[in-house]
Length: 405
Ligand SMILES: [Zn+2]
View 1 (cartoon, rainbow, N blue to C red):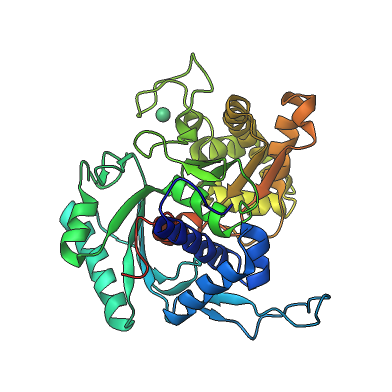
View 2 (view 1 turned 60 degrees about the vertical axis):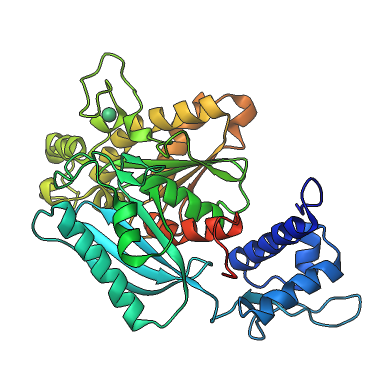
């Protein structure tokens, strides 16, 4: 893992420093010995880098973390963690009807937050006002050094140009240079990421995807968002638009989608269709607790299915018939075997994941039958928000942002 060729000695030191910082931020509790093992750097090199990071108040020793003594010399290795004095990041999540502005650290911990649910339609200046007001409030409430601002937004976006392009049903806001507007006011480095990609990045850096080199992240709310991690890195595509799973064709003879494509997955796997299915089947399931499907969200239906409501299970099964087509196409195209499903529910249970697994497993071929994993995210729907912090952390770990500046 360590870097030791092709660049200057100073460059090597910086790369190794970034690597050590990333491991400490994303794997709390690692000791100097653990770091040496993980990076293949000498104990002396690790020790020097750790001392430097401690001296700059970026990391600290964590005496409270429980760690087993080393059998060789009986000494207990000291776990390391980010320092409470380390620079922080601002994260912004932009969704339909929801704006969240958070302050957090490079380990993805949220330290302060502001949530705004606009009750009336916004124009671009009003959207910007809410975001800037939130950032200013967090800055005034917390006297901390800031590395930058990560914006996780519904797409489509042009990430390179920092623009929100033309999200459907999004207050008629389009072609808006959000990154320039936020940077102009704050003078902080500002980055933009598609919310699906932000979710995938969270999973890779802080979630169950940490040890999985290749996976598809799927976020379910009103639509179907997604992101891809390939070879341990977020796959961005040409413009940061990768992983538009909801707009992949599952029926070539299907209707035209507002996105311009034909027979998109979201035209079939959507809440309107699920509600219609429930209405048609309602009389066949007298034991179901569902009375009025029009008030149910997709997550409500997943929750009811996890509580064994037979009509909810049947409706979710129908939804998964479509969703599994889209997922299977990605798995087959990229030869990957892991999917992480994310949705805003704290109800225990994995019926959604189990249904998708059961539908895909027989169709994926014997060589990947046993390795196929459909996992449930531990972020419970918040990976796209945490991804706004992960975006800043990722830029620090890739040295686009200097934590010593
Ligand atoms: Zn579409």
